[in-house]
Length: 155
Image (cartoon, rainbow, N blue to C red; front, side, top):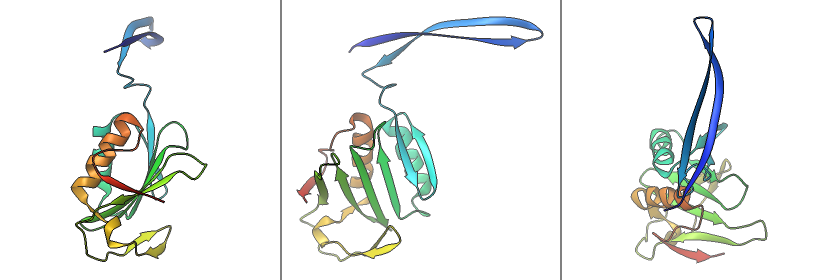
């Protein structure tokens, strides 16, 4: 484990006395540097951990049908389509067109999603369960790499 110390300081005033606060703060395993954004409709949420991302998504799942997640940059990113207990995930590695779609050979149910306001019916093998989707979100936000917890098909 590598620690990267960063000295932070600021001034604040309390009871007409100015105080200067200094402390050393550590990022462990890149935790602080790995910041990202979750987009839910018109709302954007800044995220700092996989657990925080899961909480935001779990709170929004009944109201949202499309979720976008990215790091500090536009790529890599994930687009998640939701419909009840089902999800489909698109992973975008770069703007050069490197894309993957979730793969689940055990699903045979046809599921309709809304993507960008349009109905989208993927092949049944692109549909995964909510628990698998949540595992992908946590792994992605913690690493900002393509999650290995599910199978993917190259697009």
